[in-house]
Length: 358
Image (cartoon, rainbow, N blue to C red; front, side, top):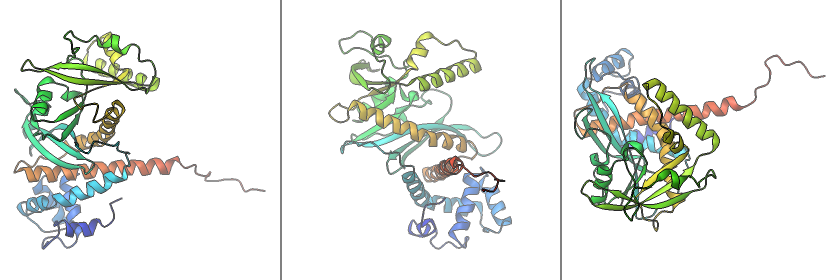
């Protein structure tokens, strides 16, 4: 299941140069995966590796080795990601597409402090270009674009958690653009002439599933300025609508909440707010790029669930990036295993005790 030449890459990427503690790249990677995938602390990892005959190494030396494996792990992630064949839509040559996300992790120990890990990933190279750690409680701690440095040629793609005016304002001030899934409760939309948009009335004519549409809108930013933007919309098919309504009811039942009628209506559509000019990306291209983000979210979901197993290395940013690449590598391996399993079990197998033919 590993990419070809993965062992040779350990040497060309500098992970296995002058490696005294480990005899082979396989021993090194198995030891790293004890820490990454199984969630053992560095001290637990070196103990298990020694008992298993993989290596005799201190936890300090393993931490240093872990940091040197960053490029190796990133290359393995990129090669596995290429196998997913998402069919990336075309992008403007002037834009670097970045996916932003966040997850909660904890420090080592049964009472370790929880932290919020914010990270952005360049597509299609799948390179973590920013890893930021904040507290989980207090002002300025939620998922927001304000946690990321943004250059003038970058387009940040995020889910509903990033549908907030302060974060979008931060991206605009830095010269960037955004593609964000709309949260109707946290980001009010306005007509460019001033009044608030009646979104339900605007969406009501959209009855054909899969037909993209867009409107010019305005966003009121915290500094009282007005930002021109675009609202791109797509109606889901009936199966997707039923699944969305089922998730809403399950979530409301679990939290003891009452669902507003408007919520059921909005769930029938994919609603994306963007500040990308229409001359740069069309309505369909905007929605396709968000679809890519949604598909990669399946991998991110596994990354988030796997991240809860491990202990966040708080020593420096290099450790955090290498740790994230290792988690993503495991998540991509899980996706590959699932693809192979679906292919294998979809083939019709002959009966075990078939009667002989005449």
